[in-house]
Length: 215
Image (cartoon, rainbow, N blue to C red; front, side, top):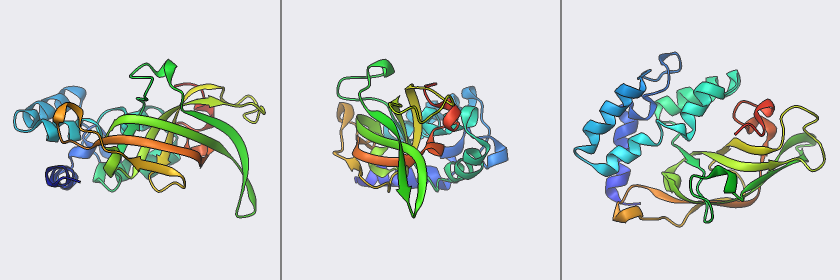
């Protein structure tokens, strides 16, 4: 990691800039979109790298999605951690063959049952190939968009197949964060999110199982 990126991430955490849009109820600043925009505008007048570092955690990835669609359990656990900078997030959408067109993504999640510690757990077996993901090299929490499939009908009517947003901790088995990019020769953190047979429980879907297939 380069020194300036490490400095800016540390600075943003210490000063609460990573939780601007998160409500005060969860330890954030509760800023409006206008207030967020004004802060980013001021930062950008000094450093584009710092501005990008602030923008991503305060957009979809995945704090805003959790604010709007997260379950009570997801909000109470993740939002305070995101607001304090305990977790550094990114949102993984872009792929080699799909930019911001989510309907073209190839990364997928198959609904499966898996034995874990002697218990059968309903979850997602994911194959991921994402690139140009801002903050990916330094994150602890990945919000990832996948095309969910349920070939065995395990959802049983709760949720459906289709584009789904999932929370994946960076230390998940078989998940690889790396191959750092350098967009437009700007040194903000950016890289790939890849993996095969990355398993997470069904509760990792943002909003829970009922939000499966709802983008």
